[in-house]
Image (cartoon, rainbow, N blue to C red; front, top):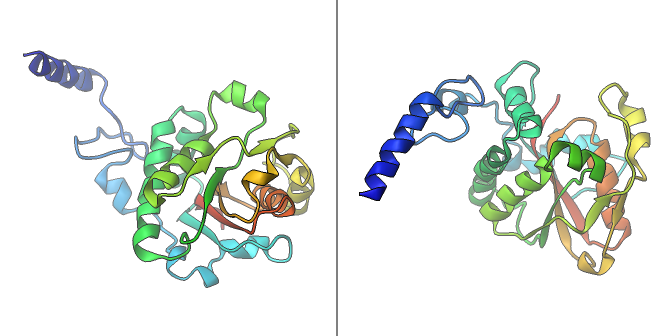
Length: 235
């Protein structure tokens, strides 16, 4: 009886406050999560994991830091569904959406690619504590959790920290972005990464500066290799 009443109550609440698609704001069907079927089937997937050696994303690290691979799930286009999705994940409190979408790509990687094999640890790009307090969560950690669950690789949030607070990267050019973040990250426990293959996670790959700085710190502190996976990448 309780379950019946609970179900009716949930249906009533869903009628008043429907779960909406983060892409088009339509009401989601019971079998849909995060995006409606219409938006999800039209996601601009990169397909980079099917031929990682030709990945456009890895070019952003060429000559700067040796990453094992760099893969992005989606193409980021201004005004598009992916931008709306990332914005709501990053600033709209949609932590579960971050984990869910990461799981979609993680499942593809598990089924269609070998790039995640032989990797020991997943780490999200950390936020400075002041930014974390302001936002309430680090979207990269939730994305990392989604990949950890789908790939079967443990995630850690305590190994890599952001020691310095830097101004936004948005208005900086490519060179300025790399200079702005090259010394802001630190490894808290080098023994935890010694000789290990690590996958770095973030929401969007732009110039690669932030991820490159993280990868450099990890490699300098003794890890064997670093691969990069993001939910989206700019052109």
